Image: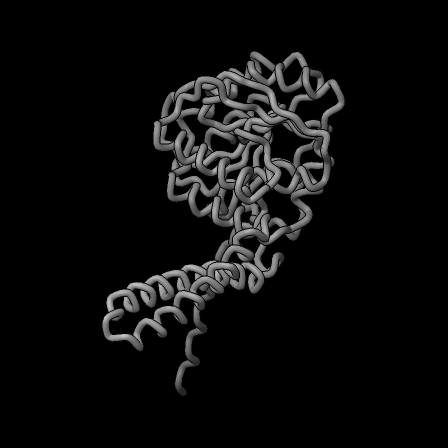
Length: 317
């Protein structure tokens, strides 16, 4: 469960998880603190003292949602992972639907929101995202797929360990297995706290997906460049005729706009290529109550040693 400033929700979500899933013999509740500035980490510590099923990781800073759940996938200690969000918009009781479907032999089961309880703008943005990704760019992702999902731990770790420059989980997993499916699940409004995902953030994430998982944008940019060249040539020819100067100006303006648009797409691709994976860590852990790898951990700063008094000067004879 990735958490960013979710102190008001932690106790409630813990109660619901225990009430619904404590019947499973192997249950670990792994919280990930993604650089919270409130008392989220304090809530983790308090729960871990009372409930031995509670584990937690706390990052050195905010690394983002993909990094937070990637850490959870890497350090989960049981064969199956149920990914929940701390806002309780997906009731933990709905996990039984995912579990029953996974028993049919699937590697991953994604929850699909029924009667989604989000603002209209957020729903419209998600719909547009799916339309562009799946229909126009032919990227294989679960239609309406969400972070509420059940995964085999070994394949979830495979995705994380690829260390992709753009670690978009829902687009990477279908490249490793075809044994995934979706299940309709209930959805409810956030009970407390503020939503961390914004339309702007979704747009930025969408551009990363479009540029990293489909060649179609750059192919289209090449075609637009050819069209821009043709428009520029037609504009130049029109400029030779005084009566056609307005048409020439319009054609040259269109050529410039088309050229700049295609240049922006190509530049974005070049930026992605020039940013190799692995240059920076996906996340760094400051504190945890479970063992963590040295390469994922940044220890707390050491205590300053006591000040050593300066030696007194020797008395002058």
